[in-house]
Amino acid sequence: MSKKQRGAASVPASTIQQMNLGEFAHRMIDEQFHHMVEQEAAVVADRDPEYLHQMRVGSRRLYTVLQVFADAIELPKSAKAQRVRKLTKVLGKLRDLDVQIDSLQTDYQPHLTGAEQRHLTEAIAQLQQQRRKALAGSTEVLSKPRYQDLKTAYENWLMHPRVTAIAQMPMQTLLPDLLTPLMARSLLHPGWLLPAAEFSQATAPILHDLRKACKHVRYQAEFFAPFYGAAFKAWMKDLRSLQDSLGNLQDLHVTRSLIKDVLPKGTTMTHFLQLVSDNEQAILSEWDSTRQLYLDAERRYALYHQLLQPNESEAEQAPENGQSAKRSASAKGRRSSRTQRSARKKAAEQSAENGTANDQKVS
Image 1 (cartoon, rainbow, N blue to C red):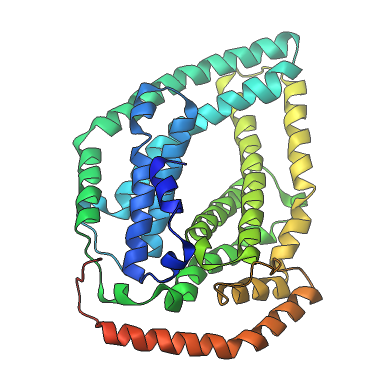
Image 2 (image 1 turned 180 degrees about the vertical axis):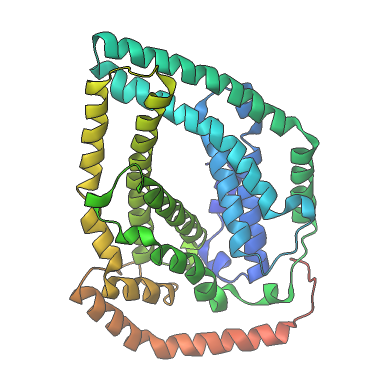
């Protein structure tokens, strides 16, 4: 966690819960932007792969923030979301090589002998050569005026933010509207329909795309964690576990293709490929039960219902599969629906009094 994030984390949840949309958007952009740029010097110096990882994460989170709050903020052209996304892709090429090299050295090289170990050493050497080129490319991008303009644009916006009329609305009123779009896209993803038995090199990109969708949902959920309780945080933990599992599966898919591409045609790597296959099957053995959980109608309704219950009790449990989730959701809905309607009516009345002029500044 960066110094900027540590400072932000000290803000009481009760203070955050009273923010309007513009104030909260400003806070999130400030946090993710500074986390990203604080890694820059160490990335250029190539001190440790973790700095690159954190810079890439920061750029991804910033991009997600811009998606979530697009209707509330007005950014200059140099700070648009697509500029951030392009930076993420540049950093991603270098990061992917770091992950691949580390995996080959740690997970496979110690378990091989003889010719296969020598072949793997050759493959690692080629990847390290590719990494040197990717590092030079990333360093060049970070030194170009386009990236410097992006930083300047965000620094200026953070000092003098421009927002739209809807930015005056209370966060408590808008939480379901902000949270449901990305969740809907992830739950409607075709990857949930892919059984383990049909996983192959051809279908692997489907689950990789599902992983990216889940990652965006998790980033978004983490932004809004101060507004929710224990059940919401437990769901965030489940998302992280799911993302890691699908990420490991994608890494294995890439590893198999990688060895085929970098080694001479006809090179035999029987033991290596068996290790890859065993690791792949270990992950897939749990995939069908996981995907069925997210295809279950009661589970899906429970997840959506959870978004309608901000500031829930810390004693609440995460949504469960089956009848228990249905009973829990129904009971909570009956207890809280009247209170929720009253709170939203009050928040809307307060918003109307605050005015709806365009191009308001965040105080």
